[in-house]
Every structure is written in C-alpha cells, then in structure tokens.
Length: 382
Image 1 (cartoon, one colour):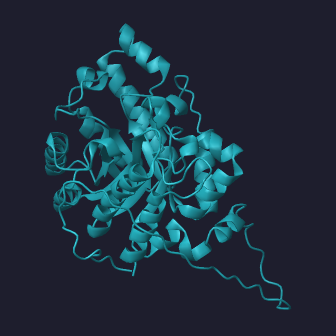
Image 2 (cartoon, rainbow, N blue to C red):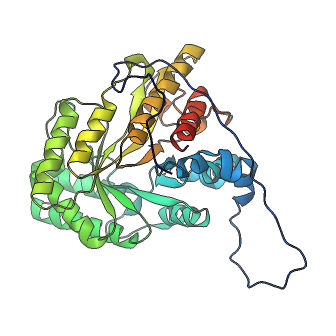
Image 3 (cartoon, rainbow, N blue to C red):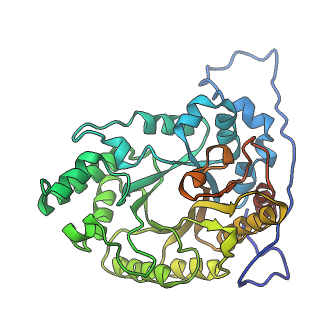
C-alpha cells in the first residue's frame, strides 16, 4: 500500500508538538479444514503463534498495520527478558516485524576473550526472528563503547599499536558480518562517530587510525556481506543541526569516494522536557536526496517522573512526529523503538529521575504513545 499525506491541516514543518492520537482495531479469523487428504508435513508453528492471534493477528497489531505502509516496525530486544518473560516474548512476536539486538551483537558480548567468539545469544535472536517472520537489524559493528576489556586495556596500555588495531577491527567486522551474512538485512556499521558540536568524536579509533577508519569499516562490512544495507547511526540527529549537518557532509563525501554507505540512522532518544525539533522531515528528505535510505533506529521518549497525563500526551506527540516524518518520506524504511515496555527500559539506569519512555507501561498496558503509533500507521496504510 502506498504512503500518502495525512492529518490535513497540520503544517509540514512545526517547532513543537504536544498532541496525542487514537487507536484502531480489528479481528483475525483462522479456519482449519477437516476430513481432507493428508497434507505434507509442515514445519512446527512458532510457539508465539497463539500470542500473535491473541493480540490481533493480521489486523490490529503494529506489525500488521506497518505492513500496509511499507515501513518496518521494530524493537530492540532484551535477550534476558525474551528468555524469562512469556508476556514480553509474546508481545515481541505479535507487535513487530523487525528486531534489533539491544546488546548481544555488540563487540563486548561477541568476543569477550580475544579470538574466542560467542554468537550463542545473538543466534538465539536470529532464530526467534526466523520463527516469527521477522527481519533482523544488526547493531553495531563499530562503537567507542561496549568494547571487550581485552581490547580497551590493550589499547590503553600500548600493547596494541595502530597497525594491530586496524587488523583487529578488520577481522572483527569480517567475522561478525560474515557470521550473519544473509541473516541480517542491515547494519549500523559505525555508531556515534560525531559529537554534538559537529566534530569527529575523539575516540581511540580516531586517535590511532585517523578519520579513514570510517570508510574502511564500511568497505570491510560490504566485503563480508555484499547484500546488507550499511548505515551511519547516531543520536541528536533527528532534526537539522550542526551534528546532523556534519553527518550529511560525511555521507556525501563517502558516497563521492565510492564508499558503500547505504543509509542514515537517526536514533530518536527524545525527552518531553526538551520539546521536539520540527525539522525531522526536512532532515530525512535531505539525506534521501543523497541517495540514502533513512531509518529511525532507537526511538523512545522519556519524561521526568512522576508520570502524568500531560507528559503522556506530549510523549505520544514525540513518537508521532518521528513516525510521520518516516511515513511521509519515500526512502525511510524502518521505525524501531528502543524497547517497548517500561518494565525493561534502559532509561532509569542512565537518567536519574526519568523514565516511562516506552509504548507500553510496566504491566504491558498500552499508553497514549502506543495508540498514536497505531493510529498513524492506520492512516498511512489506507
């Protein structure tokens, strides 16, 4: 189903939004023929299949509504919750057609000991996605955080020099992207490489390898998996500002140099207390003019606690603003929330006194933000 302009009368460019939206619903009916000749054996149904039907099946879930828009709807997945919490597992399967590993595809977890790979948890997520008809988004091949201790200590002590570091990085990208070749549709290749002032972030990668490490990472990832879409990814780049403009310039230069950069990922970690930048759509469109795909990759909208209704309505507006920017663009391919229930949110652990950032509350009840996302997908899919 094609995308079209919706919410007539709302300006295409706004500075702050503080409104919510409503929800749509429908029913799935399944039939089972009796007395027919025996059919060939089929693969066993996913254990989450009943949950998908219980939560609306092919009609009212976010994944069903998103299917009619051409935009994937995704979530980051906490693997401990997926293993231990049945409700969490069922809702991941029911609501989303794309999943991202919250942590288990990061270097710290994939190679805790040098030369010893551990793909067990990441492979579990890939298997879960396959069973439930979901696609997998890879996160992340290169970051300045959550690296294994052997790597950071080796760099800091001088045991690992620049030449060895470059070889280590190359091998890591070949190993990881190669392991998931054909199983992951796209990668955040380099994550958060520009600071909020619009400069290349001062990391050991930059200090030891120089700015060329960014292009190298993309080339190596493309060699390891030629069919995967390769992304730049960062926070505070949803609207037009110094940081996103630096990414625009970087992407333009990389493309000019023949580097296989295919997309730009805008994380979308927002806070209602800061208001929302209304230039999101303009920002998406300018990256698309470079020939890039775009995606919102880690959306959540936190608030200063306690929760109240005005904050919940403002939160719904934040989700709506980013989702509409994606739906109104031609090459925005996915909208991923960074967790979907407040029960497992990362926010309280990193932002003191803040939380309630997700679509569902701690009891998995939908909030106005969920209703707003559902309504936007419904209207866009008509």
